[in-house]
Length: 99
Image 1 (cartoon, rainbow, N blue to C red):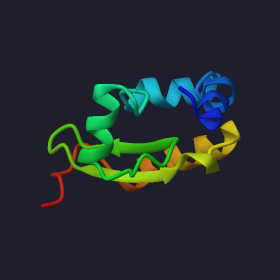
Image 2 (image 1 turned 120 degrees about the vertical axis):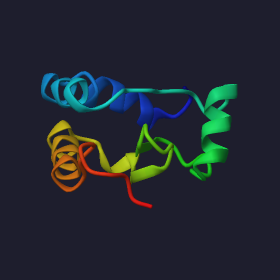
Image 3 (image 1 turned 180 degrees about the horizontal axis):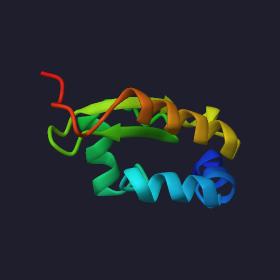
């Protein structure tokens, strides 16, 4: 990854124990460089415009993007924990996906 903000996320946010616990309990973490075939395909499919880092939640039942955030705002782990917790409070996999 050539995007320094992505390196900062890896170092400061994704490595945080609280964030790891939230992700492991409710999400599948998937990270790709946008120059890779998978990353390029993802950016095209989900219209992220190669604006990186791109953080989003995809509904595994529908493949739709449920929520996305500007990854540059996730500079501190406590902010990331708040974003993820807020998402979990708003959305539930036990409810039917939106039509």
